[in-house]
Amino acid sequence: MTAILRADLHIRLARPSLDLQAAEAFYVDGLGLSVLWRSTDDAFTDLLMVGLPGAAWHLELTRPRDHAVRPTPTGEDLLVLYLDGPVPAERVERLEAHGGQRVPSDNPYWDTWGVTITDPDGYRLVLCQRSWTA
Image (tube, rainbow, N blue to C red; front, side, top):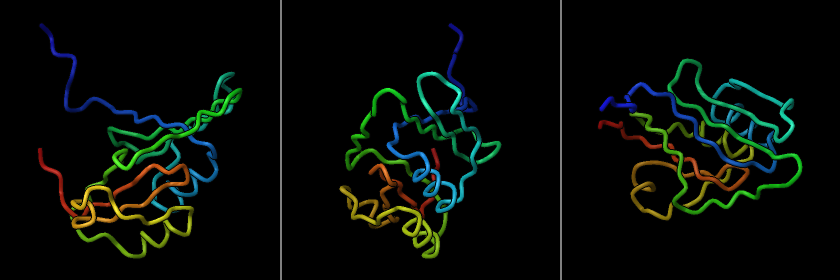
């Protein structure tokens, strides 16, 4: 049987958003990601894709036109970025200035090793000072 999964596959994380402008301010101006794609041409939804050019992942934020899909994040809906070094205080301040809110994590592990910030839709971003090794 041929394997269809590979370590270099591209990953798209998709989430609904009530306000794509606020989400863009948070992820682009606050966090430092780039807008990879934006579309208002689709008959169903507006979308915003953010990430790092050339990375094997991106975050897709959607806003359906005919009905609001209300985001329903929980304390365990996390986007964790492993920084392999200290979490810069100025980056946390930028995220807060662009619509984020620093919150205690449901799991104390993340408070020990990083900073948890909610985005404008309530999803949690964790900036972790540890590195990731599989």
